[in-house]
Length: 137
Image (cartoon, rainbow, N blue to C red; front, side, top):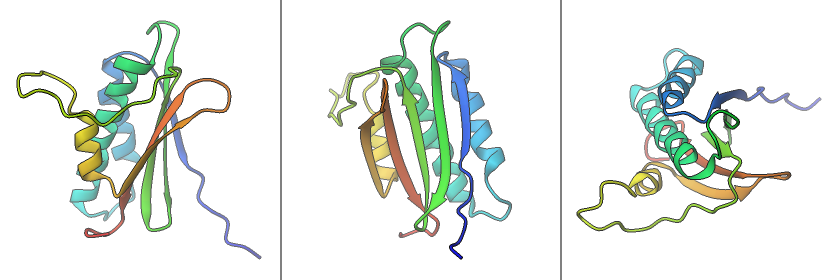
């Protein structure tokens, strides 16, 4: 008989800036006791960056739209997927030194072992990032 995988944690939040803190808190609360502190911190930071980007660049109207967040362990990683209704594809860019934004994906790229952008089957985009259970991969 095959091993039955864990059910991923799944949340939906309004596409509103107050949801960033709520999403980060939901992820922190779902993590098992005894997890290395750096992993919880890094997952919180990834959550903040990806949810913020989804709200700013992917969601439509905040009173109609939601951001979806899924967290699951697999293959020695915690995987985090943040989805919105937008059709754009986030791109890693180098902002000017004077720019006040545009560094979120640089942070995601430096923290995550792997990350990608995928279209959703019906509508929207998901950004998926993975962090290893153990530091150093």
